[in-house]
Every structure is written in C-alpha cells, then in structure tokens.
Length: 258
Image 1: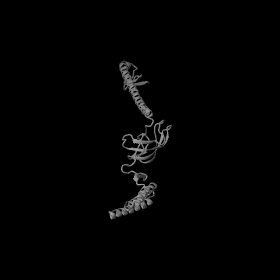
Image 2: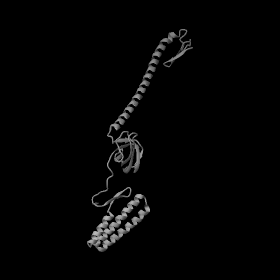
Image 3: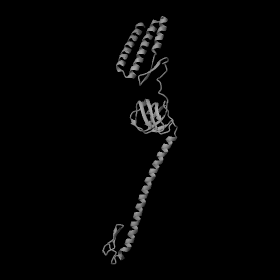
Image 4: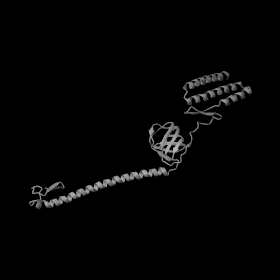
C-alpha cells in the first residue's frame, strides 16, 4: 500500500473507507486530493522562499560587515603615514609599551607619539618610539607621561612633542633635575658658590653666607634627586635630614641679622 499526506490529509491507494482511492474511493477523494496537493505545494514553495530570503539576508549582512571592515582598513591605510589605530590591550602607565598598528606607517625610532584612548582623547599616554617594524606593524613606545587609568583595547596613535618642561618664568640660571618621575628646577651649586666669592670680595659677608647656604642646599638637592632616581631611600632620607638642618640654620641666621 502506498500513501501520501497532503495538507495534513492522508491518501492511500487501497480500499480503506477513510483514505483509500480504490473501489470507487477516488470518486469522493480525488478532487479534494488535488486541492490539498495545490495547498501543500504552495506551502512548501513559501517555506523555500523564506529559507532563501533568510540566507540572502545573512549573506547581505556578512557582505556589509566585510565591506565596512575593508573600508576601515582602507581608511587607516590611506591616512597620513604617522597616524594609526590599534586594538592591542594596554594599561595606562609609564615604561615600555608594545602594540600592533597598521602596516606600512612612516613612524621612526626617536619620534614622540601620543597613544590616546579613542573614545576619550583626554586620556592618553605619551612617549618616544624605541622600535617600529612597518612590515608587521609592531610599535614600541617608552611612555614618559600619561593621564588615565585602566586597561583598554581602542587606541589612536599620532605624532606629538616631547614632555613639557616645568614653568620657566622666574627660574633663570637654574638647573633642571628629576626624581625619575617629577622634573624641577634647582640653583646650580657652582653658581651659588661663585656668587658667594663675589660677595666676599665685595665685603658683603651676609650675602656671601646666604649663597654658601644656597650652594650647599643645591648640591644636596641634586644628590637627593640622583638617589631618588636610583631608588636609594636611605640616602634620600639622609639628604632630606641635611636639607632640613640647612634650612633651619639659614632661617636662624636671617632673623638674627635683620
């Protein structure tokens, strides 16, 4: 016995009183069978169209995504040779940072660059390029200053200038020194000593004594900065103690003579 289900109705080629086409069953079931066949065919055709439409939509979405990615890559590739982007995971902070950018960029060792957090350019890192491979896009920057916290994967890279100096107004003739993280101005020890000799020669003992104090303080401050940069906390504490004593003696001398 052969059977078929059309539009939810079963039809057979035997003499079954409910489904059969034999023994005259076709007289009452043939026309309904044709109607159910047409309905079933229309249903299957609609399902095929829906499936094809879904596949077309998926393919269109994939193509749109591919085109967008290509456009983004082309935009980055065609942007100035010193601008780039990166999705490398980086944490805000100083020190060496290695990231991957677009290939073929005209960045060279020694240039200063900024690495800005793309969603908020007010958060950035700045430093000098220590290595760059334009073939692979590998870029290494020694970060000297930064603003921001956290770890992110969305960066915009561009040329910048070196770190700004501390305020220069009122600091003529002074030396620039650093603790390793903070730059500051100090009076050159040899300059203060030279002024002391000038005042001594002119008979101005008070001014000479003041510059002697300044020379000693400047020399101690310079040593303190050097020890701070080297991480020698004990030496730093000893220097700070000397500076405090010098400052106290200087104030006592000043008030005692005026």
